[in-house]
Image 1 (cartoon, rainbow, N blue to C red):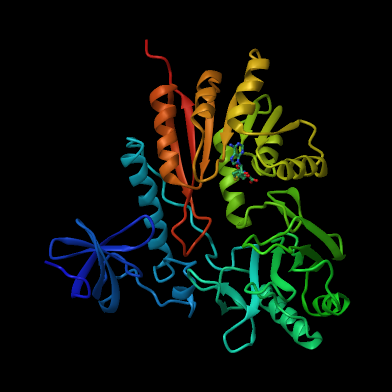
Image 2 (image 1 turned 120 degrees about the vertical axis):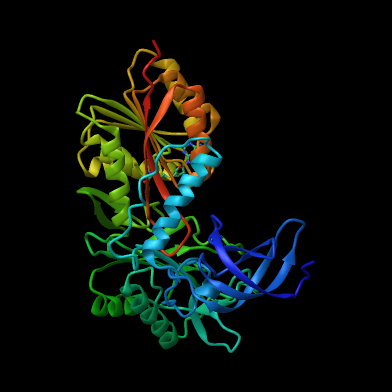
Amino acid sequence: MLKKNDLVTVEISDLTTEGEGIGKAGAFPLFIKDTMPGDRVRAVVTKLKKNYGYGKALEILAPSADRIPMRCPIARRCGGCQIQEMDYQAQLQFKTRKVQNNLQRIGGLSVPVLPCVGMEEPWHYRNKAQVPFGRNKAGDLVCGFYAGRSHDIIESEDCLLTPPEFGNILRIVKQWMRNFGIEPYDERDGSGLIRHVLLRKGFHTGEILVCLVANGESVPHTADLSAALCAEIAGFKALSLNINQTRGNTILGPETRQITGPGAILDLLSGVRFRISPQSFYQVNPVQTEVLYNLTLEYADLTGNETVWDLYCGIGTISLFLARKAKKVYGVEIIPQAIEDARENARLNGFMNTEFFVGKAEEVLPEWYEAHPEEQIDVITVDPPRKGCDEKCLETIGRMQPLRVVYVSCDSATLARDLRILTEQYGYCVEKVQPVDQFSQTVEVETVCRLSKRAKKL
Ligand code: SAH
């Protein structure tokens, strides 16, 4: 019988969807973080349940062929990159398998899954960072990320997932704080001023926005900070101030003011222009977003005559990609500010064939359909949050019977559940399943699926 604190040697044979290695100690399955299939490890048993347990790897006795050196010295403490020690091709295979397994196990679907589309450069792909500022135990000014399950800040300026300029900007902000005696926020007593620094970069335009999140209505000496950023950061366009005087964990407060520049930056995705302010929702990996949404466009198979609904449309990224090739695109999204951005982005690009609605997809779509039963909808795209589509939304799609449904998903488990409903209850068949890697070094995977109306049996 295995006991807690026992030392065991384990061959890792599989990986959970969360990226933990699985192996057996005797016949007993153990989950061991920071290991991968092919590793033989010496581990200590940390927790036992009835049919499985957890271990902590103490030593890699023989490494997996997929194991590569960790590039970031603090990856383990940060926890953001769960599979950074895995060769990139192996990461992609893991993601393809993850989608395939979920479709089979949860969706009951044995459709082929295309190999996950990888990134050309699986580092420095994020266009956004929100970095907390504070003091460490020694009293030094630090910025970085919160250590797991605590609010101690671990110093980290140069994250391997964000643009290299971000590290330089953080150093400039810190130096400016030291020069002018500007205190970081202290959440224990609510004192101090600078809570977070939010950074965004338009990858196509090179424009950079810096937003100070402050525990106050104003911040002194910002002209000096602007001057330093202008002098040293190519592409620096805007410095803004977000006011957050609440005591909680929410990063941004409701009000943002311009300090220097236009208060927003511009970016392009496949030639469509987007205006990005500190608070706008915008896809964080722009290069792979183009890949994902161009596939969505391809799967929608538009000729210019189609009417399309884009459900869960956010700031209208998919809607605007489709609007170039469709007669009419309707979008629905629950967050009013995102719909304002969607309308503004449609104007910015001169699209006259889009119409956006604020509300829940599962309410707006059935209401619209009831009011317009005659209007033929050719294609519906959905890009829901992790919890997937609401049943009522799927049921309405089932009644509307578009020729094609293109499902973009950030969680292959809920995707599988929803595909099962669309295929078993509403007469669709899954034609293509294409995973796309938006977040290398992590276990996340996006998937785009094309469904078509099944030909009626004779
Ligand atoms: N394609 C979009 C992003 C989609 S992310 C873009 O590129 O901008 C999923 C979106 O669904 C989020 O914007 C979220 O606010 C929205 N959402 C969540 N629940 C919803 C619901 N019930 N009805 C409509 N939109 C919802």
